[in-house]
Length: 281
Image 1: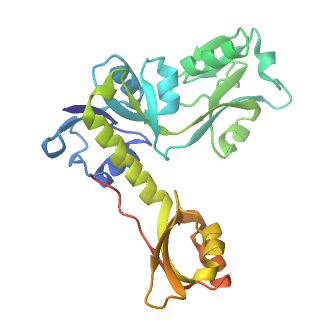
Image 2 (image 1 turned 180 degrees about the vertical axis):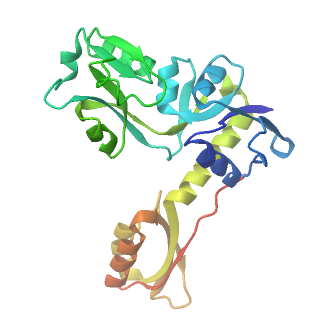
Image 3 (image 1 turned 90 degrees about the vertical axis):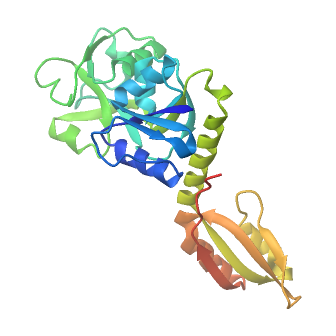
């Protein structure tokens, strides 16, 4: 049995649940369900607060979990990241009043408000800065205006919320975060973990790549390979017309149109683009 922690709410919850469904695991039918037994896959799913997932996994209560890299690092849990999942991206920055603090080194002796105290303390320590970390739950943008802190450390997306509060970002990002699969230290001994990772990698491949099939003259194969190198190397098959070969390769989804244009330019024909099915072996 593999015991898996899942976020029960928040921005990561639905994408995480959808990813496991695509990987062939059972999903919950009711948002109030806290535990699901997926007997077909020998997996038990536990729906927990996203902030608690790394703690449960790190303490060995559960084998693996889907959570944010920011939440993992903030928790200080001994759980380890084993696979980035490609969704829930966010960037953490320091921010303060315009014209005020311009560098992390200037935070010495100041107050920093954040919802991620563990993450911020670790970053301040890395920079050799001694500052007071003020923990706040929820929005922290008003902390400076209300006199609770001198600067804040928070997720920054468009920056609109910060500007509305009269704040601006300074210094390098504290962290580039995204959803990740985390595991307890001895989880490698469970063969079902390897199955889960392989399936999730299959989902990621299906999300990021498409399959391109085309025919090309033999003498143009090397040129075609430069356009469609594939993940490893393209598959080449002979055709009845010996002057041509059939080529199959995976290409990044985001560059599909550009790849097709280049293939047409070098003389490829019968170009077919198809979706890739996620592996559920």
